[in-house]
Length: 388
Image (cartoon, rainbow, N blue to C red; front, side, top):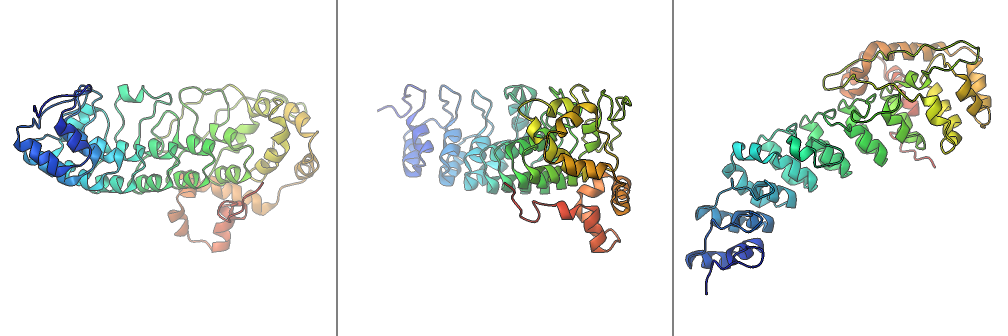
């Protein structure tokens, strides 16, 4: 029979043998005149099919007989992308040296994107060891095909709730602030405390805003943590700008009008300073389906502030809640001097130092004082406390 006969998808017997990893059959077909350069209807080469099958002997055989790692399918994917996504470590080892950077650039995505998307940590580490850049961005046309317009390898790992791949990428230098929807917001919304901790410790912008659409005056992350005190304190301990939650156009409880302020924040490399000012926190928390959380949330906020400028609107909501007595008692009395000193020291240190625990370890202060500055008494996640 004809060894190059195609099925309904344009796949030859050679392609089927490669896909299923039957190396002896593959070699026999090649010796009988099977076309190693044949393409299926979707543009997949025989080597692409072999990359999906994962048999390294099939890959080696096809390369020996003229197979190319630089032939994309119609979706633009190369064999190296397929092997990385499927987690075929040994196949990937063969494909890395035979795939050109030009072909990868033309494809619009890096194999590290594929490995992270497929949640394959070993393949991800292999690619990083071979010099692949963890900060390579998806091409615009690929990024635009996703609703969230993701760009980075790290985003794939975070959106998959993949702690191991997230840690590998961050340790390799992945920038957590490159996507329109910040990786931190994805992790907070998913309730993944460990990924949030990792992102913050590697410089994720705790005060980020959703860059595509934003309707809050306060930094976005807190709105996804209102019902999770562990997450709430994780964000606040790492420098969330809680003052912005009390910045509004309403009068305060003494009748004074607030002036809508411009947030003065430390802009770190890769952070955006763009803020769309719209919905203040008092309006946000006062809606019927959230206002029952207001007392609990504001009580937590107070631990990270000196003077708390309550407006009439949020006071009206708080007065109906069980936490109001304690909140009022705190507001009616001067804050402890040690607390005020902590706030001042944290401001002088800046977010970069506060987030980088390694630099704080070298800071010439007694451990007790360092722990106090870092709000360790409120590090519920670090203590392994999981509240109901």
